[in-house]
Amino acid sequence: MKANSMAKPFEEAGELSSTDALRIIAKTLAIVAMRMEPSANTTLENKAAFLVSCGFDTKTIATMLESSVTTIAPLLSRRKGKVKAGSRRKALR
Image (tube, rainbow, N blue to C red):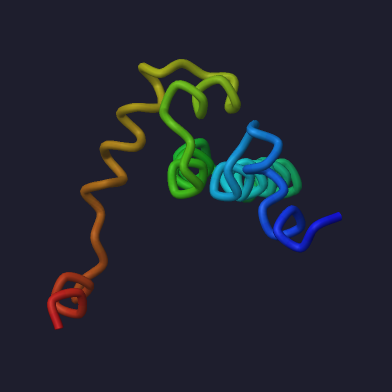
């Protein structure tokens, strides 16, 4: 095996770039983490927010949480409005 082929195994296969592979791994780990969390401790809104932060779109989140887009979208838009006090000032520094 060549040294270059070990550095870029996905690019040589022509299927995935290394960035795409890392995104798939990250999303898979997010799904596993969410499934392992006791459901009594988290709300639908928290689960949806977690999945958005992991890079999932609203339609995928609705499917994963066995809900509809019309239910998930308002939860996420409501969550966007919540900002901790002082976080804007810290971001501007």
